[in-house]
Length: 617
Image (cartoon, rainbow, N blue to C red):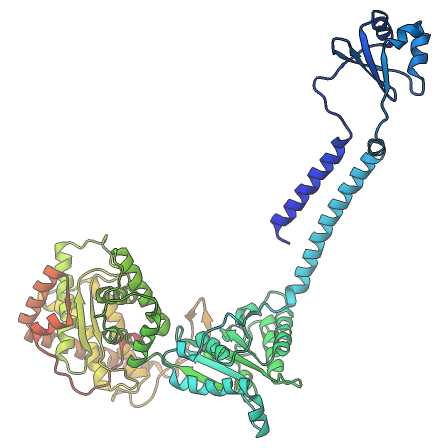
């Protein structure tokens, strides 16, 4: 019962009680004057009294002028006898109309039992209210160990057509849908459908959406619960919720149980943190038993999602539990375009909007990122007072999502704008000249986020493998801004700090992770253990000596030094083009790809495989 309903009932009961209290009383204002019997006799002798109403021991006296008085007599004594005793004659008494009024039985009863009844009613109301409160507390206490899973049944209208890309994943999940629709076909040939399906992928790649699409395709109930909802501070509550969840699922079978972020409860046991009897491990043990114990869950398919499959307990991944693992990658160019088309449904866009160009500029974006871009573009169009979304809003939304909004309040001085223009021109010209770098799509000196300016370079195609030369050219491009400042001004600024950090990380990865250094040989250096504190990795197992560490440092420094020499050489050769680019940037603040290539000519690229800086760092 809602609190408003409870208060309304209590208010109505109070009004009824007040009505009962005052129902037997006649409220008159002003009250009649009380006179003595002797005064009444005198007034009768003076022929001033018209009539007298008798109510038990109360007398209501009315004069001939209409004035009312009140008097009292002894109970049980007739009024005529009383007046006769005061010396009135029968003739005098007959001049007054005497009316005997019987008091209502209900009023008499209320007067006698009213106070007791009111007390009892009040007691019952208070007792009932307290009982309801106790029952609510008991119900909440009993529900503490029950599953909080939310069931999506009729409202679930998501199908595979609402999920763009992920072709391989949808093919794998089609078997799950077929089993839920036609289980007899599999049972007849002795086939066992996987009990658990683990969806693995980066955040925003559509793991939850795919799980809902499976339920929508199969038209079965869909129980959704987060892994963190199992774990409580009291030991045993999580295991109880797991049992209750699977009990509900059995009743609704065939159905799907989806556990989002299962790594919150499914981390590897025996780490020494919390002992062997902590709440999380007991909850995990119960999940293992429910999925593949003595009591099989026929018709119940467990789906789970995580972006950290490396930390899951091995018992959770063995056959019989999550024996089908599906990896969701970031969408390709074609998939990104299809995702943009789906999220563009219901949004008015201009006919000349090129979704392919938008997809080309969103390399490395997940489905959630693309959805955010479409939403940001709609917001920008509304902010500009437009009814239709144009291409400019989409391109601006990409930059806003990647780098942050324009910092219009962050006004650079003329010297700072000039330094920023040369810095970004250095990045762009080195990236344009070196054949293994990505194409330059835009240069800007408009501050966004924490950057005073930026150079947007994007690969022409999606790539999965990368050559060493691509890294070497990428290092030179990253140090292009640093080299330009050194070449033009003879000094450097703090604006290159982030570039140096990225370049150092790439160079170190070449040596310690990818085995791309001839001096260090084809091996990796260092092992990172999964020991996380406050979101930071605090331990690295060094499997090499101090002498090797010094050699690694020298090789990394040599890579960065060579990259800087290459960048300086390009900038020296392209000084005239840099001056033209800087002048245009200071005038217009940004240069698009087409305008940039008019200045420096088309890029002469070779077949290459290059990794993005963000992926390495």
